[in-house]
Image 1 (cartoon, one colour):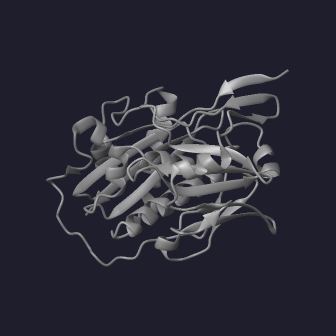
Image 2 (cartoon, rainbow, N blue to C red; image 1 turned 60 degrees about the vertical axis):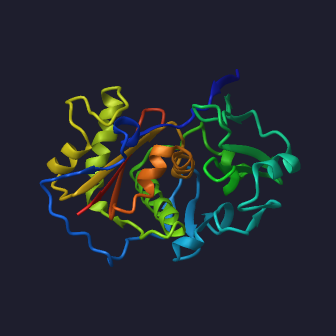
Length: 303
């Protein structure tokens, strides 16, 4: 028996969508922004596939990933301007992809279920497209804020892609850590190529964000205000995070951090948070629904 489901599109909110500003001033905190602190960066990340992502460069401006299972290269992620993957350059236009490959896949089949793929955001804009090319599932991500150029490309070998039992990966502590750490690296990549300082990864505060993600799942809401009426500022304060400016992005619907991040960068409010020059620190908390769907809470702040 074969079932057909709609693969979820990313749903997310940033502080900007709620208050007309994506960050806030905590007047009770001191203003002491340190300008020359190093960011914490990991170089391998567990993925939702049977592989780990590995960073190839220490320089955030030259960010790319290789996916390896044992010694086999089974995936990749490219962001470097001018580099070509499957005949498409980073910074090419969506029209170039359409001319070369035509329409993207309408669905992808895992075991007994076909998932219908939706490439549009809530306003009907095409943000990406997935194709089957040379034995790989290849996704081209477009930048709505830069004339639909190809922002990045991710590809997964067909055997690795179809080894998943469904749209989402199997939840585990290792996967959660991998998704959280990779999200921070993706954010810092964006900041560096825009001429901003990378954020300091306050990994010790991840449990604060994880708790909000868990509450959203348990109490069935999706908001910056939790089931007790607390906002991100209240959660930072209760968690002992000294902060002056603060902001928050939340997201759910995508199966990993690459797809979630790419969608967030095409949303104006989320993008503003990611690229706020005032922010100096970040932490991320993920919790999984029973079906494996990750809920993201990303907190930004400065001290």
